[in-house]
Amino acid sequence: MRLFIRHRQDGEIVSVAKVDHMPDGVEHPYAGLAEDEAVVEVDPDADVEQLAAHEIGERFTLDIEARSLRVRGGDSPSRPPGRSRRRPADG
Amino acid sequence: MPDVTERMNYFDRQFLRAEDFLDEQAYHLDRRRRHNAGFHAPGVVEGLVVAGDPATALTVSQGWAVDTEGREIVLVTPLSNIPTGGVDVDVWIAYPEPEPKSPPVTEAGTTGSARVVETPVVSVLPPGTVPAKALRLARVAGGAIDNSVRRLAGLKDLAVVGPNLADDAVSSRALAEADPTPGQDTATGTGVKTNHLKNGAVTEAKLANGAVAEAKLANGAVTEGKLANGAVAEAKLANVAVTEAKLANGAVAEAKLANGAVSAAKLRSHPSDSAQRAVGREHVQVNTVSITQLQASLVLGSEFSVPAAPAAGQVGELAITMDLTDGPSFFLVSVHYVAPRPAAGETVNRSFTWTRRTTVSKPTPAAGLLHIHTVLVQNPNPVPISVGVRAFRLSE
Image (cartoon, rainbow over all chains, first blue to last red; front, side):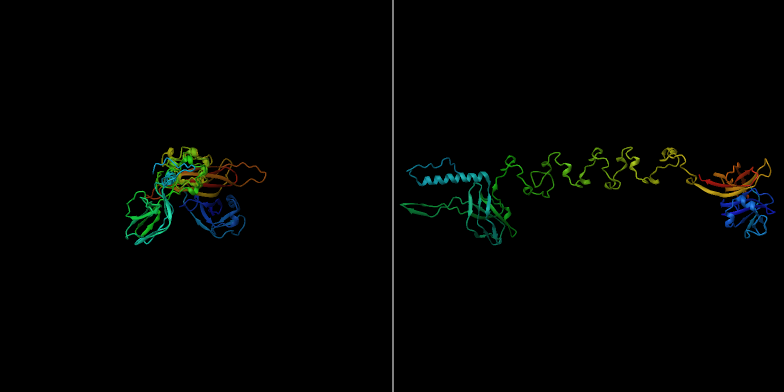
């Protein structure tokens, strides 16, 4: 499973995607990103994998600099740095 | 054979002459020889075996025979030094004719021979020469003596006919085994021929298991009515023994097909005419064909969180890229609710909608049209939800 985080520039998570399969030729499964939105792929740990997608958004924020999930209301990253990608909004 | 119609009749003080004694002998000779010739075939009775050196001289052992006139040919002393001349010959024996007499004697002023001499005459003759009233004993040819050419005395030809045979008189031992001569001519050879058997004579019980091989059956000999139900097992059929032309329409029922007997290669197909396909739409049961049985490719299998509605009467939206194609395409798409799940005993009504949208793009002047297929999920609920999205692209 791959984990993609769609977020705003302030680190707020807009959507979480737990991807088992996605089309060839795309970097992430999201379309229609707003101007202040970006998508980052992080390596999920076992605990995060057990959560529903919306639960990840409720419990974590994204540390953009560290490119990792941070427990909402806490100060320690839950994940090692991930990869961050931007792509223009499409259809 | 003399015509003897009288026999001696004696009375007291009768004066007998030599002629009377000769008539006495003649009567008995006549009746015995009539018996021999009438009831028996001429030939060797016993002995008279030819031996010796075929190149020089032969011997004939003692023995006796009966000639064609019923006369006994009796050789009481073996004969030897019968020259062959070193060539192929037949050895014959015959009753002496005329009958030689013993040397004459004179008694009471009269002279006569007191005995008739029956010593047989043995002769050797070139093969093919048949002396009258003689019996052949052997043939000497190629340096060998063949005694089997002789005929043995016995019953006359055709002497024993059906009515003269007692029931069960002919045992197996008395039947000659069939010779290798082909054909069914009952006038030659040995053994039992076709015409010796009555129609219907050979019943099933007389046939051994496996007695009737394929080569013994005429084409078309075995009709359906002659086969018992279940008579023909698979092991008894040669490969390709049963061709299509031999099967009646409807002959092969479902129960006669083993599980897995019909492979895909045996099902008729046609690229365009469904009427010529073995399996039509009516042959497929409802709910039989699952998505995985279609020629489909999974292009998206993911779980997404969809933002909550920002305010009452509004919706949170999420656009998802489902697939990229360069031309016509067919999709099977499922968007299903995942979470949050109601707590135990809680009743929650949540809804969401989703739509498909296709955007066309031409990234570069030289590139073709790129179709970007997306799914837009709208969440009217005041809380974020998780939905699962699975999309299959179908191939034509």
